[in-house]
Amino acid sequence: MKNLALLAAALGAGFSSFAEPTNSLENFSPHFSTNTEIIWAAPTNLLPKNLWIYKRLPARPFSASVISNAFALASLPDKQIPKPSLEPFYIWAPSLGEGMRRDVLSIRPASTTIYFSPSNQSLSTNDVPDEETVTKRAYEYAARFGLDRAHLIYKKVYVSSKASGSDQTLTNGICARGIFLSRKLGGIGFFGDADNSSDGFAIEFGSHGQIRSFSLIWPNLETNHLEKTASPQQLIAAVRGHKIIVLPNPDDETYFERLKTLAIAKRFTITKITPCYGEGLIGVVPTNDVPPEFIIPFAELEAVADFGKSNMTVRFVSPFIASDLQRFNVR
Image: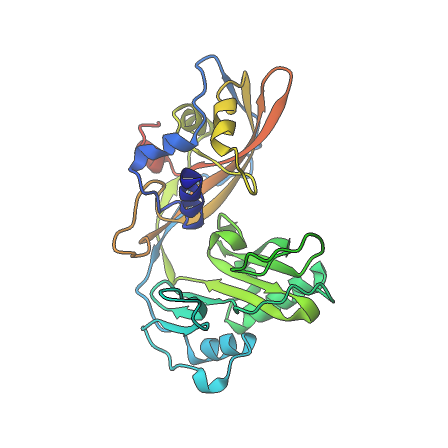
């Protein structure tokens, strides 16, 4: 479904890759009736009153030790290790056909990312590490990239029954476990997980603990200025004004039908709010493939839609900075 693919791409890029102008947010929001009651029931005593906006600093080369450790984790030959540079570096998998290439390893200083995913991943289910082992090894390997544990937030351990970039899928059994450690800024993590290319470190282990993939996204940042966070009343106004994004469920084939169903809810009760960071502003498209200049706080929320005889739990995201909501005339 093209629109759902667009939504997924936008979420994966930190909300910054919509192909439509800002009002396209309305395509991903339920259009509640004026009779729908929107209730705030989420605890707010721990919510920050102000949050930092972070600015991306000019790119700089990865250090020789970081590059060397990336090659070691990927089990790639030392002779291929490049010198630190601002130029991107790729190791390509064997050609898949005319015009079809896939990178096994990429080092991209401009976006401060390192990514590894071999083209010959095993689907063996033998001796896949457990959650405790995966978590311990992830923190150990993150340290090899110079990441301080104090600047990481454990998000989740996930399981896989598929080889990355492959149509091969096991009908039962687990062939890998992975984990995403989100970057932490001022005590707050980034939106998303290992599938959404958020700032942080992700790694996946397969049979006998073999590393199947890893990614590092860690731009150089500095604090820019403090901004006031939105009030519950402003966030309710954002819901009412269709300025939110309802998050798709895994393998969601009925996303837009679900939005239409949500619109007829009698009551919409917001039960949880979690501040998070993301790159760029919702609805603002970066040009020339240049990463967004600023890292902006967002809010991830949960709500229960009550239809009278049934209900539905919903996750959605919203702007969380008061001045950001003002772009949508939400005050």
